[in-house]
Amino acid sequence: MNELVTGDAVVLGLQPARLPSRALAISIDLAVLLTVFVLLSIGLAVATVTLDEAASAAIAVATFLLVLVGGPVAVETLSHGRSLGKLACGLRVVRDDGGPIRFRHALVRGAMGLVEILGTFGVVGCIASLVSARGRRLGDVFAGTLVVRERVPAGRALAVPPPPPWLVGRFAQLDLSGVPDGLWLAVRQYLTRMNQLDAAVGVSMGERLSTDLVASTGVPVPQGVPAAAYLAAVVNERQARDIRRVAAAASRGSQDGAPVAGPVPAFVDREFPDDRSAEFRPGGAAAPSTAPAEKKGTGTEGQAATGFAPPA
Image (cartoon, rainbow, N blue to C red; front, side):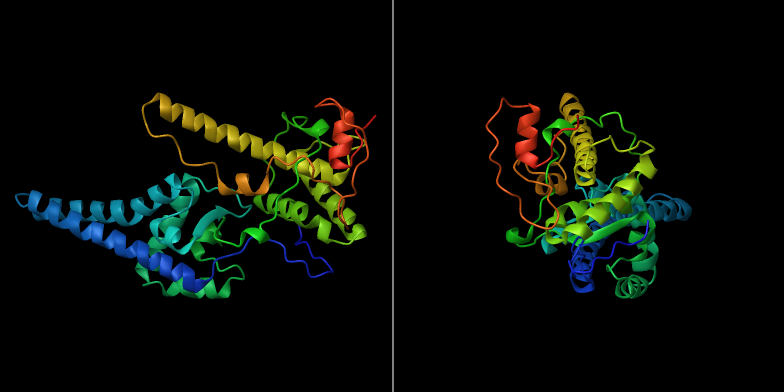
């Protein structure tokens, strides 16, 4: 899918972290890792003083890989992209679509970091970050991740409007595995900014994104469903699956006696508030509804809350 371009200079996307803040976060992480590595090496040297030279060298290499590669991978996986340095600098590693990273993302970043940060003393990482439009190093490019600023003014946080009630759960059986991360990001950006777009531009972009989403899922848009409502319903379904996955992992951890997993990814809380009053009206603010109150869950409520009439 080609990059979306608007004619009204609306800023779309996450707020990537730049080189100074990333360098400070990496410096903090490296200081902690090197301290742990030195202390662990001294302890192992004392404990293995009776071993031969080959065994000592093997233990030293294993310790190096375990601490300086395995450590960052484990921390980023368990903390959903926030190491000690990133936490101190207000940064977080996310996927290209803004979702939480998983083990495979952290593993690729850690393996590439061994080469571009430790192997070249950070020279390759700095050059790649300066050249990249979003400040990504090679590890981010190969892993499909992005380091973003997590601490932003509360007033600037934009929420993705919820779908109409009559569309919630309608796409529960939809296969979303073939949707690329770049398309998810474009859809979420569109939904958060569509009220700032010209009406014609907003409708055109919504139809274009829904066409791309249909091509990825192989299921056409239901008849009578507007493009913006369809996009919001599909994104809401993906978010619901992420929440169920996190809840299931937390439940398994509590049953095994382990600590409950970390909080639900930040993008879930910020971008999908429980606010059924949001409307999908590209090009302007939502018009107040004069429809009479109905019993919760009816089609009339869905029309009044979102501005969409359920399809016949």
